[in-house]
Picture 1 (cartoon, rainbow, N blue to C red):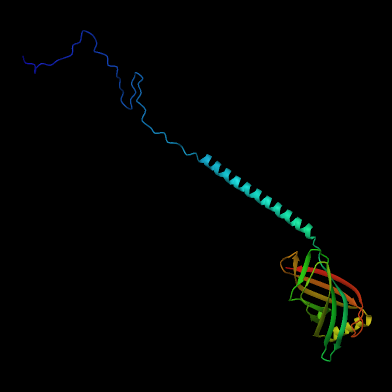
Picture 2 (cartoon, rainbow, N blue to C red; picture 1 turned 30 degrees about the vertical axis):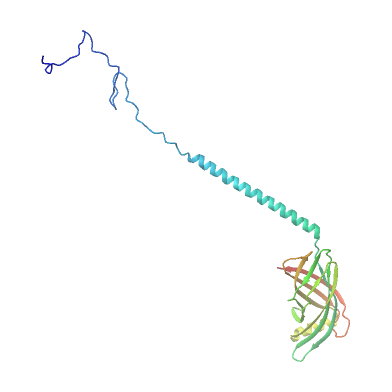
Length: 250
């Protein structure tokens, strides 16, 4: 029997063809029976929330600023408390200075309208502090002036003044200055009235020592306005009035 020329066909027993449960739809098409194409495959990528990152960054900056402010505030309080303790412990008081005595060793007018003078000034320096001493350094100067013209000059000795101490400083001043006829006449008139205005200017570098700790050096400037009754040599000079102005120079 020739089987190769024969084809085998499935038999249908008088009815509809067998039902195939698989149903398909083409991509991009929608059938009338409500079938939809399967959704494409997508990968869910996590989003980067920049706003939340900025908020966290601002929060960290605010915390750092608050910490720095608190630290500075506490540091200021500690320093202020320490300075208040030092102030109450040492109880600083400014020293005082007075011209106690003035002697005239020479007061000579010369034919060339120059004036030679020699004064001896005694200055009283009072240190009223209990725990603070004062060191008077080198480089000081003291000048005696009449009507803004220097009569004579000198220097103060350098020494260390201990607490609760009064020191009498003797300074010898010498000088030769040029006086015009007008200034000589004014000076002679003041001597005749027995009211001669003089100005003594003192500049001295000092170092304040608190206990055993020396502080930074500064200069004491003393301006003393005196009125004396005489400038005759070998005669006691009486100080009629005095006024003091003390400043400091860093």
